[in-house]
Length: 452
Image 1 (cartoon, rainbow, N blue to C red):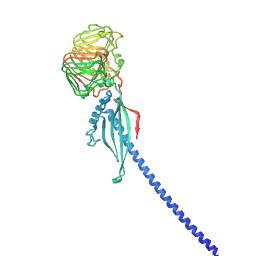
Image 2 (cartoon, helix red, strand yellow):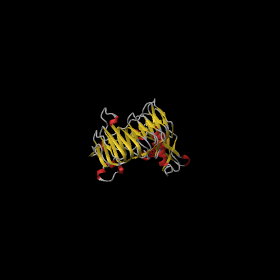
Image 3 (spheres, rainbow, N blue to C red):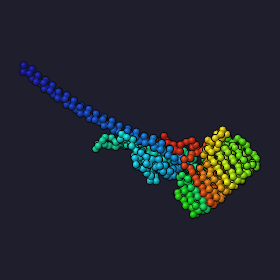
Image 4 (cartoon, rainbow, N blue to C red):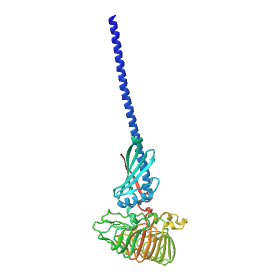
């Protein structure tokens, strides 16, 4: 009997111990489960905050990519000129808008800084644009998400970066771009119409690359040959004078889209006054046009040819010329305008079937990189790019050029005294036949996309 009582007491003690042990295990498990649950909640909260910050960064990349590509910067610019122009364009498009809430885009010469732009629900982003290479821009966007409220609020950030490259021929980013020397006489002004940088000069020649008498240049003056010098005389330069800049390659121009539209053969050596439409001048015709000539559409000049215009030429369209045969002297590939010359763009042609195709070829005026050209007096507006081997302009030249002057030959460009040249590149894009035609000015490089 006593033994049974002892067994019952022992069993009761063991049961109590087991119960206590079981409760302890349950309590420990509860603590672990509570800690794990809290940890999981914290991890989930952190992951959500990081995801929101990353999404804010990606939203910023999308928004700023749109602004970069559509702000009006030219895809022909490179180096500091590209970053400087983009800074001005971005400020013009974003400052004083609701996006910035009274803040402004800032620029210190090396970084374009876009202030915080709110997206709502605690999300926002900031941006920075730099120039990591001569022909590259880098957009870095920092997305932010504010997690929590009050004193426990914390900001989570994620960074997204993407590079852009300019797509257009670099040469058409200069007002005057020449393989040879640029000479400008007394009282010569070169000005950008809508942007001072449009009145810029580049020369690739050695020796004295740029020579000026007196006057004014609104843009930069750049030379690439390390031994080149400049003689600017009494000319004031508003932009930057640059030596030993990276070389600029002249565009290779495909003239096929233009030449195929010149369907009327004009083979008279003495064509009378009148109107000529979509003409082709065979090689060795060597015509001298009389006074009061109107030319409409495409004028295709085969090489070699010497062409003279006397007085009062009204040209609407595009002049293109073949490259001269090997060994053909410059004197056999020459175009001369004596007095009173006006070039209107292809878009100004009559809206008739005979000019329907030509009207689409806007942006170029003279594409004759193998020909020398001379203007003697009173050249009026030129509505497009001029590409020539050499160009000489004499006496009282007052003109607005809606595009670059590209000089392919070592003879360069020579403006005599009393020249007032106003150049507008802003908003222009490469015409047909040039690299970059139909492309946006800046393209993103998907392979450079990174997240941090």
